[in-house]
Amino acid sequence: MRIALLYPELLGTYGDGGNALVLAERARRRGRRVELVTVTLDERLPGADLYLLGGGEDGPQRLAADLLRRGDLAARVADGARVFAVCAGLQVLGTSFAVEGDDRYDGVGLVAATTVRGERRSVGDLAVRVGGRLLVGFENHGGRTRLDGAVAPLGEVVRGRGSDGRHDGFVTERVVATYAHGPVFALNPWFADQVLGAALGEELEPLATVADRLYAERCARLGP
Ligand code: GLN
Image (cartoon, rainbow, N blue to C red; front, side, top):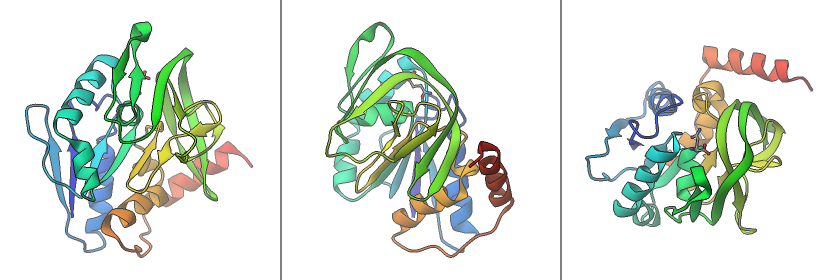
């Protein structure tokens, strides 16, 4: 399986590149073969089973959107590839996003989602109920994302703001996205395995690590 971390020099402000390391390591510890490639902005978009996008500032985010449109990420996904995206990465996958000054930019158009500027920045802890479980992390963004009615959010916000104060992220057949930094796979091992298992096309056997205890402690601190 090949995982491609896309443009960390543009979308790496919040340490989301750690998501790639966590996925690769969780796969390897279970004996799966994984190739992890880091794609810089001067490189062509390579083929991959799973593309990872992180968070970043407005200017670099615009450049990343251009590169992803030109590299035809949408065609790769139509061919079966999957994408996991965080924050700025989430925003560029939509149809359009606004940055400073309310200028609107075209996104990749993979998901029917539009991002506008919020009245104030969303900064702080973020907790989201995804199925029966909690996803924990932190957020730091000025955008608010509205989903077309046909697109499912990732989950409901328990703490923080997420996409719009009620929901966070989105899920389609091949794309999963959240506003949660952390990196979110290091903080939420169950979520890492959910995305990894879907990309591998198999149910993964449990893998106990110290991350489980730390995750339990974070959830306990959030209270009932
Ligand atoms: N630049 C975007 C915003 O402020 C995304 C920020 C981020 O990725 N944390 O909305």
